[in-house]
Length: 57
Image (cartoon, rainbow, N blue to C red; front, side, top):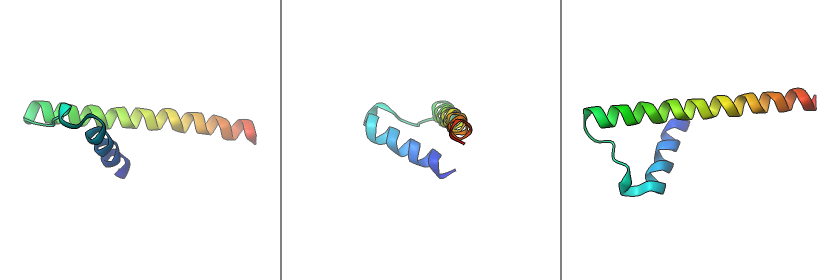
């Protein structure tokens, strides 16, 4: 779960004032979009790493 906060911090540093989690609609939608994007990337990385372990072993 901590990786989601790290991802949000990196986004804040990279994009600065161009990203704002404001308002009920914009903040909630943006928050969940980032969470689902991070989960998707972690899933893809997990599958790639699993394939590497099978090939190497």
